[in-house]
Length: 158
Image 1: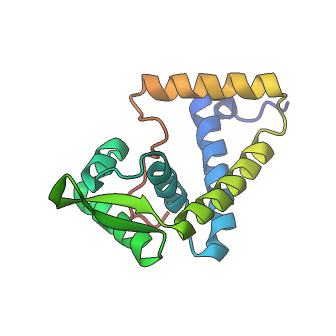
Image 2: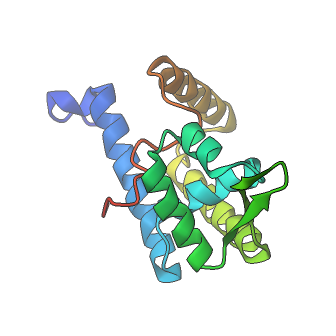
Image 3: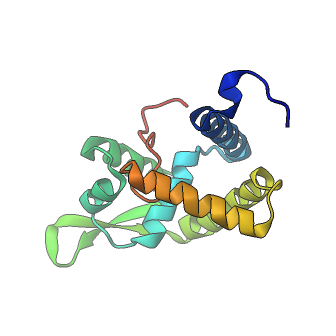
């Protein structure tokens, strides 16, 4: 492996370089569908916690309440999710994927898995598992919530 400049062996630089590349590739694959990676993240969280309140989802994602309203409005306008009255509290709503939302989530998951395989093509299966385990421990040590991208905010253009 070529040495390059000193920062080329910096873990922070390498993680940023690879993370940016992965984000750009995934975003490019979603662009023809009129979607952004945040849509995949939201659909995934809804699939895992269907029937949750909007507030519970906002808390789980670490997203401000007003940003969550915009994210859910977007999914609802696209016919991917719906708000339903909470039978236990008529003042509250629960969030649910629609059939179209479930189908799209499955398609996006397949795209994400393909992108992961491309990114990790230089590693064998054991190395892949070890890398994922190490990255999950690092994320946890930094206080990052599992499965929550730190830039989920719908107001961001990137």
